[in-house]
Image (cartoon, rainbow, N blue to C red; front, side, top):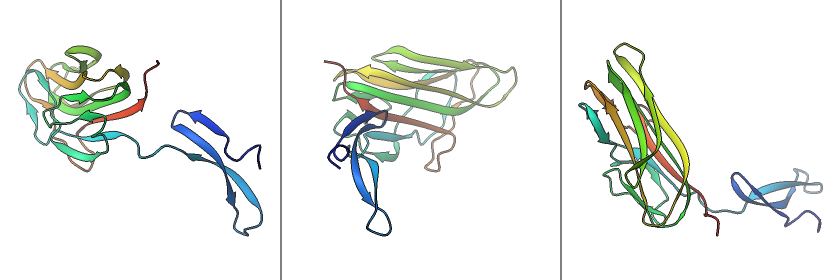
Amino acid sequence: DAGRVGVLRWTAIGLESCTKSHKNDNVSFTYVWTSVGGVPVIWSGGCTSHGTGSGWQRYCSNGVDYNTSSNYFTTPGDGRFTFKVSGYYRVHSWADGYTGSYRRCALRKNGSDIAYSHQYDGHSGWQQCSNNQVWPFKAGDYVEGWFQTDSGGYLWHSWNAAGQHSRMQITYVGPLPQ
């Protein structure tokens, strides 16, 4: 037991510890890896209204699925997330939009693009645009999700708690190197 129980390992999901687990007969044992970390730091939600028109618009954050991030970054509802704790964060935004022209989306750190994508298939219809990025942020930095069309329509369909149409999620991944 001394060679296994209490051994720690670091994986993509965080710190884990080897523990002893009883099988059903309470006599034989198995060893399992158990997460040492607490509740994940994550914000998930979206904009409760449609984004319409043309040009670039910031995706708002006034609808919330869940939020365990209050000690790590602010979420005022206007779509600007300001970091309190330096670290690596995964930022994911996606939205269904409707237009007959190009659709573009971007993640912006302190006003500059850190991720960009676009979509155009030559006909009017609902299409999805998304970005998913792990990026370093320092305390005081902010990130926003932006969407754009050339000729009007829906930049994004409103968020809903069922997980359809649009959403933004931010997850703390880990500390920056010293």
